[in-house]
Amino acid sequence: QVQVMESGGGLVQSGGSLRLSCVASGNIFKINDMAWYRQAPGRERELVASINSANIITYADSVKARFTISRDNAKNTLYLQMNSLKPEDTAVYYCNADIQVNRNEEFNNWGQGTQVTDSA
Image 1 (spheres, helix red, strand yellow):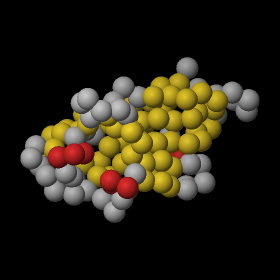
Image 2 (cartoon, one colour; image 1 turned 180 degrees about the vertical axis):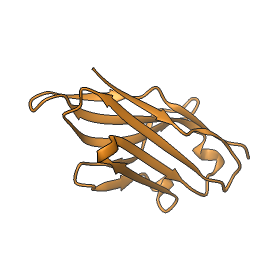
Image 3 (cartoon, one colour; image 1 turned 30 degrees about the vertical axis):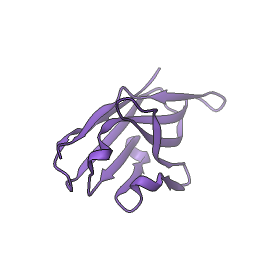
């Protein structure tokens, strides 16, 4: 069994910063693609940023130059550094990871989410 769990959300003033973390635990053989998504009230879940096992990174246009995604493979951890936060960044942020439990089986895993609120 594999789990991913986010932390680091909270209340922040506009222009402020937060760092989200996502730790994967359990029977992990290898972690492939990892990503951050977010969902604001009344809106669909959207991709914020992704990073694959070769450290190829993509960002949504709305967060480019403000957010930085990174991963520490030794710690099975994904990060999202969020700077210059705006009211429109307010959302529940979810971690997503494709995790192999052996050479032949890979499962897609979601965390439970962490709330980020810009107190503009």
